[in-house]
Image 1 (tube, rainbow, N blue to C red):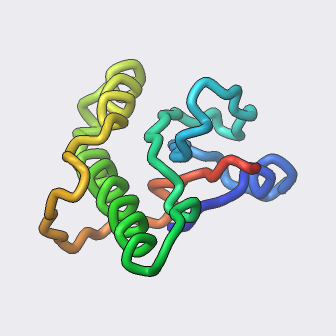
Image 2 (cartoon, rainbow, N blue to C red; image 1 turned 30 degrees about the vertical axis):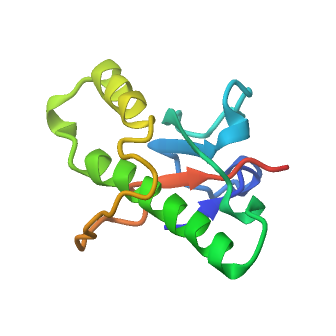
Length: 128
């Protein structure tokens, strides 16, 4: 799993149909997203861009750790949704409900190993 620019899917004739697309940058809220092949279900799970953190490593490192924590706190509930029991509208609502930060910043979180197919979750990164 990796962040992918939308052109990777828009221009490629052999690109796979997408099932799910998540935008994650804070500045993508309210922006019009491209038409994705598929069509996939979409949700915005905004979080601050840790690459914009300034200062010494002691300040930059926690920004990346916080982004990692916030993504994990959203991906975990997503991969455990009862997909086979949800219609498309219900699944869309559940995906959107996961978006707000489910934990306060800086909260410790015990990481558990997960098994997920790389094609199950695709995150897009908006282009600047």
